[in-house]
Each structure stands twice: as structure tokens, then as C-alpha cells.
Amino acid sequence: MAWYSLPHGANPLVPSQYVSVGDTPPTCNGNLQVCAVFADGGTTPVLSQPLKDEIITALNNHSSTANVKLRTP
Image (cartoon, rainbow, N blue to C red; front, side, top):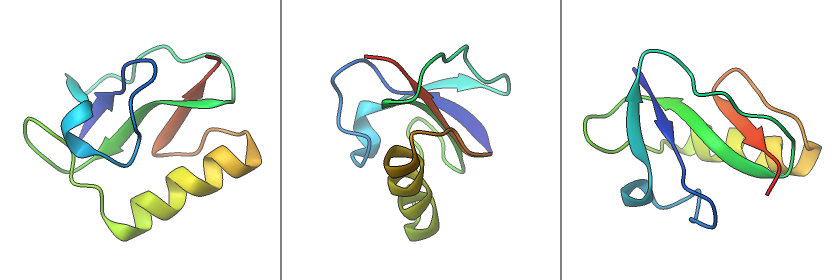
């Protein structure tokens, strides 16, 4: 598993829009947009249904989770 960063304005449910950043989570501040996810994968993350659900929960609750980090736009 690795951390994948999502550029501003990208769709958090599209794996090809993420960039692998390795074992250390990126610094993410805020609670409105997906900043990064921790997932299986290679060049892009595998967005399993449980991870997609976690992304949606994090966004709805405006709170980062163990596998989803949020930021301010």
C-alpha cells in the first residue's frame, strides 16, 4: 500500500488522476476536498468499493479518515 496525492480540481473517484507519493502521507490541511488516499496499487491507486465509500464518508463528514486525507480548496 502507498499514498497517492490528488491534484486540486481532480475527480477523487478516477484513479488515473492520482499521483503516487510513496510511504509518507502528504501534508493535507482542511476538510473539503480529497488531498490523498492510502491504497493498494502501482502507478495509480486501486479504488476498491470500501475505499470509495470511505472517500464519500470523509467528504460528507468533512473529516479525514485513516485512508483518506482532506484539504481546503
